[in-house]
Image 1 (cartoon, helix red, strand yellow):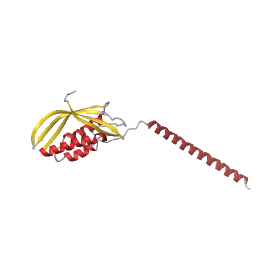
Image 2 (cartoon, rainbow, N blue to C red):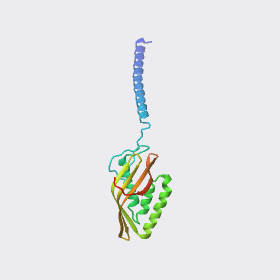
Image 3 (cartoon, rainbow, N blue to C red):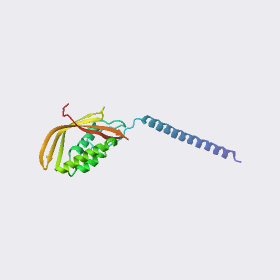
Length: 188
């Protein structure tokens, strides 16, 4: 039996075990660091939601959105509801309904179907030109003010200043339209 050879092998095995212990310790440290950073992010989730067009940066959490998001989303919703012709109202109605809160879906669908039939029957079109959008981050709503122009058979029948309030709710990290109604036109 070669004592020196056995001692060298034993020394080599001990060095290998020490290197493996250092690697395992480093991996355990990385795991603890990853776990602690995940725990710190727990409850502070921000969902990235992309509105139809991006004009400004914004943020969205599970319960509310920034006023910039409300402005962009509200302008899009107002366009879907108020800027329609007999040929575009059906697809705009379907697009709008994909953003509506499930509790309000039936009522808004009925309202839009009645409006679509009326526009088609009298061959009317409406065009809304927003002039002011005021978002309220606390109530998650906004008021959009502008000029609503109505044309029947190509002839202008109305050109009035109007204001509409759009209320938003959140479910599953996604904004939903909870309400859309005309309000008195009063400039803030």
